[in-house]
Image (cartoon, rainbow, N blue to C red; front, side, top):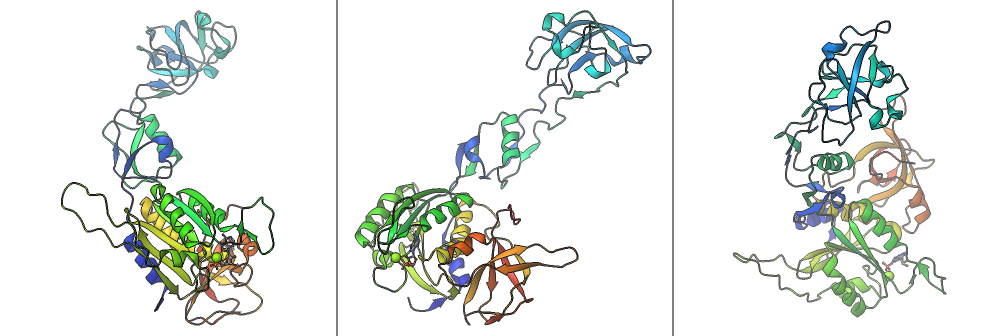
Length: 450
Ligand code: AMP
Ligand code: MG
């Protein structure tokens, strides 16, 4: 740990060495939130056939051209078509077929009259109370309809050969719905990254268990697991490993098989029992990379580098590639606020890079600082204070941000109230009320959901 790294240098190093995951074919339900790697062409028209948009009667528009309240046109009902009906009655001149929403327009018919424009049929009440056998007799239509009325024509949504979705689309609910409507069951996407979350510390006890003297609950593994899931990853929370380098290494080697990225917390500063640093510094990882066909490519070097960053909180950080697959590992400091801020600044962008999601960074907006007293900030370090952001009020150009808690990195209750990080640049030593600073919005949408 020789020179001090800036936040930007550390992030740039991570982003330069983390590659998007190889695409795989996934069933639709598993592809939610994933990025499509190739464009999808519409295979068949939507709707696939002309169909009714109302419950009513399929008619020939010409037959009812003169229909009115005073003088309804009476048509003979010769059959019915329900959604899914395969056999269709033919609608001849002077006749109608009872039809349900989504049912195919029978041959001969060119319009649908909603049941509300009729006497309901057979003079015995609304069509929806009839059985199929009762779909006989007569119907009085008291309004004319244009040809094509209440008919959803084949291909009126999309035609075959059109672009359904372009490469790079993030698959949300409507996109998955479209693919299903097109009959497409699987898609090629970048998979969600699998993240192994390990916390370290002899003092850690899982929540739900009583604390002995000097013990605390392991909050980081829960916090980081939740943050990884919110970032679109599939997290595996391993929980706390005691401060024993051998045990830490053994656990890590076991876990690598299911990791696209590893996040650890604790054990990276300069004290005694800094287990992560001790275990990973100069650890000879398995360097053999599985040989594939074709010219062998030199794999990137394995190893983890521990650094001092010019930031607060989150000064000690480690990053590297480990194991035969050169799995990225980010070792975060143990204080919960430091771990969370480090996740936001470094792990989340790495996960989004693996996923192929853009932008990789949280949205940043300017905001005016709202606090009673000026805040001190260490010179030469970029400080990330926790804050509550309020969007611009009526007539204001920018929003405001109020600090939540002080700068200490153990303040988890204040962190739980925050929805933004206030960025105090390296050169700032005093942040005065009313001054403008950049704020990173932590909510997924940028808008607090509470
Ligand atoms: P370390 O970097 O391991 O020395 O940890 C720094 C501080 O963070 C210590 O006060 C630890 O007790 C605390 N800490 C470390 N890991 C966790 C964790 N998983 N949950 C809560 N606090 C932690
Ligand atoms: Mg520790």
